[in-house]
Length: 130
Image (cartoon, rainbow, N blue to C red):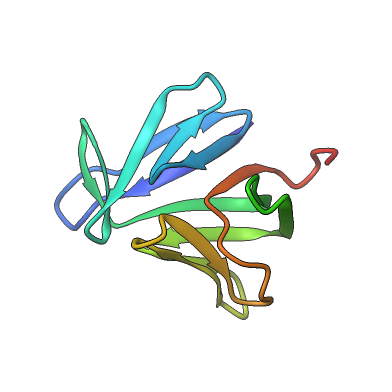
């Protein structure tokens, strides 16, 4: 089971969501049951409970990006991850941006390669078979 912590601004409460995996399509993050966790808009992650600055995964995870139109996929991880605004960052001793969201294309661009835009991704436990 994965835990996503949606980090609230100061003076507000974080939101905790647990799921077997999380997926991202069309600027929204979904849990394994298909329930919407949050939508990315104007630099924040938004849901009924409010606006959140980041989404943190404190245990090592794998992220599998895909672009069905290009028949492309890329995997990154395992490492702890923070999605803050439009940036996906590896956390830990050597933090680094690993992907950025392009709102005009509604897709993620991985920092480490030129694989093209990736409109979808799945976050899963590091122990998951791919």
